[in-house]
Every structure is written in structure tokens, then in C-alpha cells.
View (cartoon, rainbow, N blue to C red):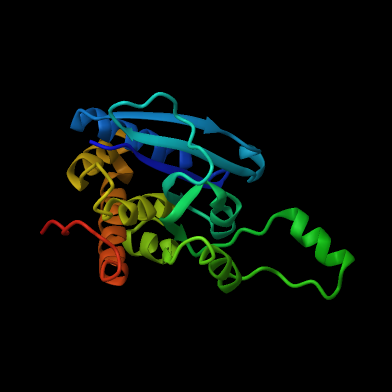
Length: 215
């Protein structure tokens, strides 16, 4: 099995560490090695957070070298752009369309009245300079459909899991979700994962190598 490298990104409070734990637990269930290197930002102040994660056999270090990541999973759109340098040419960006604007951007707009907010279209345009493979989902709407708006993170994980190159299957991931989330939130998280899989498969798998969706 070759190593699959993914950089997880988001801001404090979005449940990024839970995603890392779910992937690690799914690896243990599947008998596959998962290593992470967490780099916490101002997580208590909605600051930027990234986690380097690899799944494979002969892994020497968790950190992903610049320009070599297979995928970026981002729970916030601007954070995908912040860490795009880690993605290899032709890698895949799986991201939430949500934008959580940093205080610094607002401060700059106060000083410069002609300055405009960066919008989702601007972010996608810049990302496309590195890769054409960009999966953008409205994770909040799908999370609401699942019955819990706090499951945005699991929606995006479901989208990542459809990639053929991603070495963990949906059953291991759902088993890990069931083990790590509180019992009262278990059903909503499983549904959120399945909705993320379904949406990604329907919208993006004509252009990407994907697994089949289990019935």
C-alpha cells in the first residue's frame, strides 16, 4: 500500500482534531498505520489549525513536504488556500464552502475603503492555479439535513472518503465515528458522513477516480 498524505485544515472549534482521531481509529480497525503531526493555531480564538496526516506502511515522519500532499481537506474555504502549497500538482482539494473571515481582513478593510472581501469564487480561481480537482460542498446544509449542524466536519470527511486513492473504507470510518462521538450524536454523524459521500460522488466523480458508494 502506498502512502496517502492529506493535510486537514480549518479554524478552532470546527472539530478538526475529532476528524484526525476518527481517521486514526478507522486505521486501527482496518489494520493500517496512521500517523499525524498536529500544528495547533489559536484554536480558542477561531485561529487557523492544520494537521498533517498520512496513511500507509513505511511512514518515516508525519509531516508532509511542500508540494507532495495527495489531498487537502478543509473545513473553511480560506484555510484551503492558506495551505495549498502542501498539495502536489493535480492533487485534490475537498473543502467546505463556508468562509469565516479573520479579524485581520476586517481591519484592513477599515483602513482601505476600496478593499473587498475575498469571495469563494476568488478562492477557487487561485486554487485552480495548482489543481483542477476541487470538490466544494455546502457542508452546513448537508449537516442540517443530517439533523445536526455541528456535523459539517464529518460531511467533508465523507466527501474525502469517496476518492479511490483514500485507503480507508466507509465501513471502517463509520465504525470509528460510532466509537468516538457521543451516543446521542451518533446517528446524525453517520448520516452526515453518508450525505457527504453521496454529494461528492454525484457531483465530482465524473472527473475523479472514485470508489463505488455502498448500498
